[in-house]
Image 1 (tube, rainbow, N blue to C red):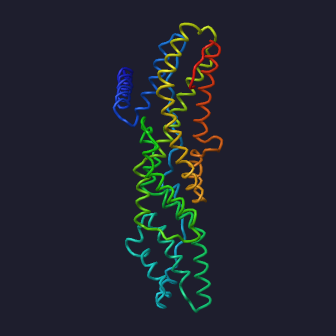
Image 2: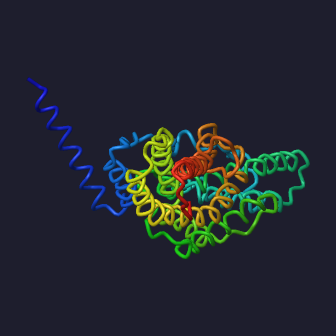
Amino acid sequence: MLIKPFCSNILLLAIILVVVSGCDTRFKAETVLSEYIADLNRSQSLSVSSPAIVMPKSFPSPRYRQQTLSQFDIGLLDFLSLQKCDVGAVAGRKNSILGKVMPDSQRFLYELDIIRAIESCDIKNDSLSEELHQVAQTKRLELPKAFGNAVFNGAESDAFFSLSNGYLPLNYSTAEQQELLNSLNRLVVIGGNLQSLPIVDAGTFEDDLKVLMDSEYAGRLLYSLARIREYLDLVAKNVQALNGGVCGAPMTFLQQQFEAHYVKKIQPYMGRINRGAYQVLPLLNQLFEVSQPLSSDMTVFSRQFSLQQQGSEWQHYQLASQYHAKEWSALFERCSISVRDL
């Protein structure tokens, strides 16, 4: 009794997905990739199924990426304020109503300020001075965590790393990412100089985080790499199974589809992705590095963006590209066909 309604629901879902992918610019690349498979399947020599959607590891929830920071002793603050020390005034920001709920970006700036205040505080009491020194030392050690929280634990990072934003645009250009590169560079400079207690302009710092959010770059890149890899692996596996019997008219048709879809559309799109990634990923990986130690979940997530680490999403994507080119080249060679720009 439930079979027909169930089938109808599946059909409706499929129709909705097709319509969405066709109308939503976030998934235009999916249309290009699926058309590649659809036209290859017009040949009687191939039967390539659409790849299953296997998503990369998603950005961890806040509870699994936030690092705990030490709190300043309130009793000590009361004592310091009596001696007219600036520490009390700076720490008062954290203990105010708004301070208790300050976002991680503001907490990072506070940590820099409180360390400066402590280290510039002239306390005559030796035991109190030693206690202050220990607090400052602890907070200096925690600065990478505070910086990591600021960059990776806000609403800005949720948008920057979200996989729900789909692919990078088909016409993506490195010219569009200059603002992102500028912001990443400034953040890397801050993160790389934490022990010198850099003077950070709060407005610029917040603006740079917003640039990351507006770009949605990291999540879009990760999604694009994963989906392209799945399509290329699937096509390569099917092309590898073809033998010399496909040479002749069937091969002419397959060559036409390879050139029309891969050489003229997919490969240029991948080239644009690569050029952008080679600019952004080194900076992003530096941000991960200067924020060490990351939580275990964030460490696993961040490894997907590594340019060198085996098993990263970038490495999987590069291997799929090579595998795809290799199998087409082997097939063309078996059929004595010369094709440029593989």
